[in-house]
Image (cartoon, rainbow, N blue to C red; front, side):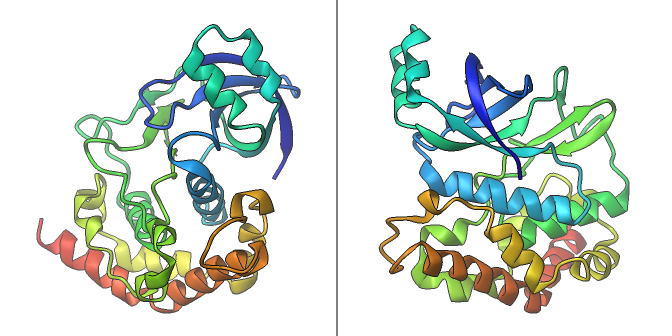
Length: 257
């Protein structure tokens, strides 16, 4: 994963609950930046990196994710006090997603992804415990007539309660019944067979290792960032072994439509 430095705050995207913004970086690229100092905190950034890179590993369409180094002095050029406070609170590494100019929100009444892609996205969201891909908030964009997955800050909901994370690894994930693509997901068994073989324990370790230590520090459930990191690896390795729980729930939910 590349690290770039934010050089200019361009515009806020106020439809996001965490006040993301379009920023320019020192590679001349434009990124949608998620701020560590926003109300959702570092856990949302951890979810963006882990879920996003798992999606990439599985071959799902997702914009490039970078680590964005933010100098809090950029706040001096912003007239909005709320934005100033956000920038100052987010100094250091944040998350950026490649900005897709001209992209439009996915409309389930207009767009009909093929059954295998829909099934693969449903499987992935159940695996990563993503509660936020509903008809109300699809977190899907259409860009150059292709579907793109965005905004995984609400995934990995288990990490908000580490005491129950072991149970969460075997969770059937009943939220999948609200998934916007579930009606099209008629090839879930096929998606499971294809996707589960692409993820190995070493892949999970590699992806979790991308998370900066600073985002993992201070979690009271763990002695240090290393122990915190291992807990994510153990959760996803266990979830993959016990995937019949969430796959079965998705199949049942699809059958009830």
